[in-house]
Image 1 (spheres, helix red, strand yellow):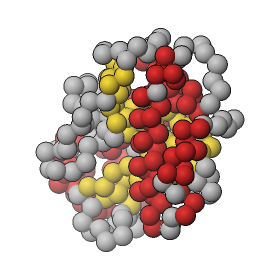
Image 2 (image 1 turned 30 degrees about the horizontal axis):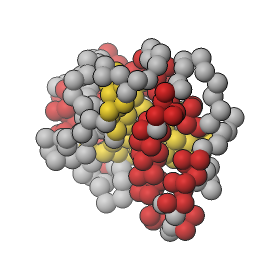
Image 3 (image 1 turned 180 degrees about the vertical axis):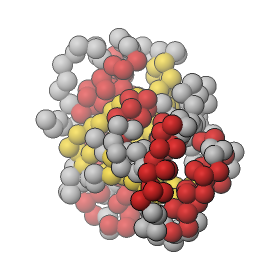
Length: 257
């Protein structure tokens, strides 16, 4: 089911989405949907009328319900937007917007928009992956480095593919890797770091860039769903590389569900 939103309609006009070239659309849509989240949660008429079992009439209602429901939030008295610092490396944090609801519920959103079935979630070199995920097994690192060097598993023997899949599973690396790709941390209890996302918000759009659905899940629920897939050596992620980074970094894409 699709809904309407006056806020979103106005933002489409503000960002001139219909008039932008393809090369500028992704950044504009990303900025627009972040602003949409801020506007909705800044609108006291919307937030004050929130009820867990209330009727969903607009995309605004859907957004608020989908973010509040998993955390048992039954009403909204206040919403603050804590500032988010950069990573120690100077890079962008996974949290795009942080919502402090009722001064006690900190929901740290990672926000994406796409019409594709898979969306880029992270891109790092093996040394960073090793350090931040906490991978110490030499065989795993050797195979991951081979994937980075080749840009794919095209030169992997079948036995190497199976070995990497088994090691990621049995050394408990699989869930850590996926959690890190999605949230910015491999730990399940990294709640204090505002840069580490704990909720995934995906705006699914059609080829005309109009909103079709909002996928809204806690990160741990995303990790569980993705790691039940068989792709990407059993991680459920797609392992690839971005233009210009072949041999230097691995790009991870996650399914849109």
